Image 1 (spheres, one colour):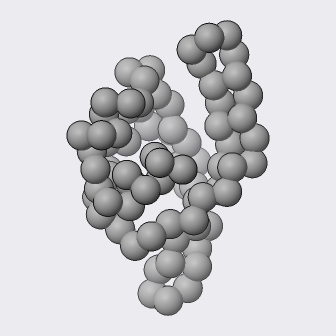
Image 2 (image 1 turned 180 degrees about the horizontal axis):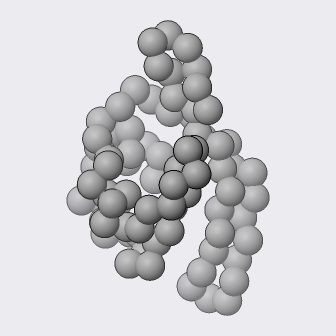
Length: 79
């Protein structure tokens, strides 16, 4: 949830310091981006709500997190 708060603030520097170089992130529209594009797309936004659905840990340094992030856009919540 700290990651979502950093995204809300547009804090690219903090995110860059904690995200793995090998990050793969699937956006709501199905597009998968790497760390560089993920950080490029980060900008301050209205507060989000993040619901963690599942965390699968693989070994000591890899995990897949499934979550739903909802934002308010034009007064309506969008997931």
